[in-house]
Length: 261
Image 1 (cartoon, one colour):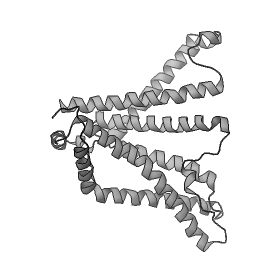
Image 2 (cartoon, rainbow, N blue to C red):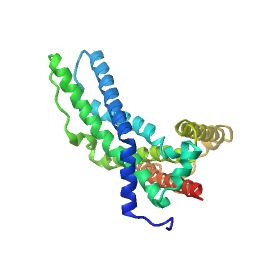
Image 3 (cartoon, rainbow, N blue to C red):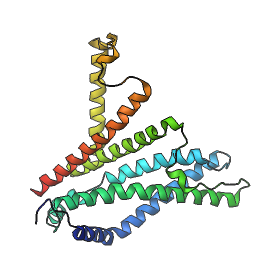
Image 4 (cartoon, rainbow, N blue to C red):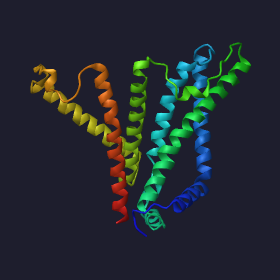
């Protein structure tokens, strides 16, 4: 069997095996996710004189909850790598490297980005209806379209979509590659590595700009490699997020391939 062959049948078997072995954990995790959302929304509503949450709160909180729980879940990808014995068993499974990688990506990133917003939408409306029973305030249900619809100026809608999707995908890709690289406590080590890189880059930039004097140099715009106009600059960084995510995913694939060898 070639390590580069992808078989749909074997992929389905991987998915079936995952659901059989982890059904209870997935149900408990979904229940915990819904419970945390319900409790935090309830505390916030009590603190706001029982005023129900609106669409603006819905979208802001959805981004926060989905991001945090997605990173927590994706940061524990490749669970078989947590011990030597389970790693050997995982690598000996009759599936190609590509199948294992695609399965982890779909089950950890693709699946979670579809399920978590839906669960948040259900929890948000459930909490709103529950409080409307015991209070005099009327709760206006939030439509499912608001999980993907953004109220923004027309010229900035696609830019905001690109920034949110690209930034979220990059964050999940970093957690994903960290779980493939680190055996013990992958999420903690991944966060530490990212924080260290950001601190080093920030310190380097400060030294270059302040002490070397680059900040006092004002070259013409034609000499710059990136656009400086606000909208063009945001578009540049939004588009840069996607190849950065692709690089992180490719690193994770190479790490899995290295373990197979």
